Length: 230
Image 1: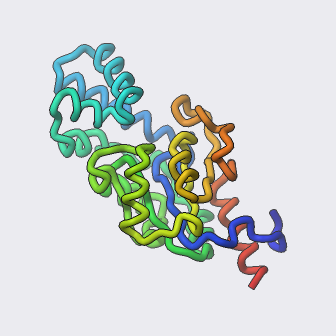
Image 2: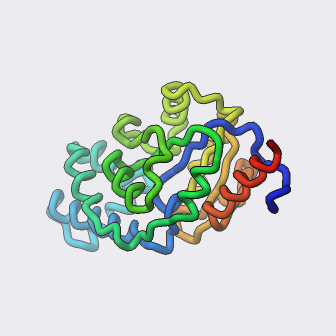
């Protein structure tokens, strides 16, 4: 797209962003730290070996949507203990992103975070990137009653809470399958391309409207097109 191209999303007034591996590159491998912390937590909490803990972690993710949900459902875990532990990570692997900051500043519309992580984790990451001031609110796993995306009811509650018109909104995600409920509810869907094992399935699905390689650059192009159309 050039700065004279037509705005591909002229109808969008609300932008709903996932956080991890969406607003920073998956190549930072921040989630490697989270995964390791999850394994360590399970080892200690359930007195398991590292290999058994990792196997359980992956099984709970497949069967319950998140490892946390599996630990809550099967093992009666207090979720705050888990969230506090697994998000105690080093964020210096993420570089501040001035281009994304600029793109968000020029992009018309309300901007929200919708994440399976915690508010505190989201705040720390957004501050590290340098874009926290662009977002009016964070919908986290606690606000979702610990039910993770892509449970459709969680999307409905998010839409109702903020008075979002799905037909005038867009959702941006690194996990392709998390876009299906958004599409079904009438939102425009944008997948941030990556090669992480759990993010790629369904990336060729018809419910993805746009697939982008560089989110900041793409949003900047949208902002340019909107400015040119004024």
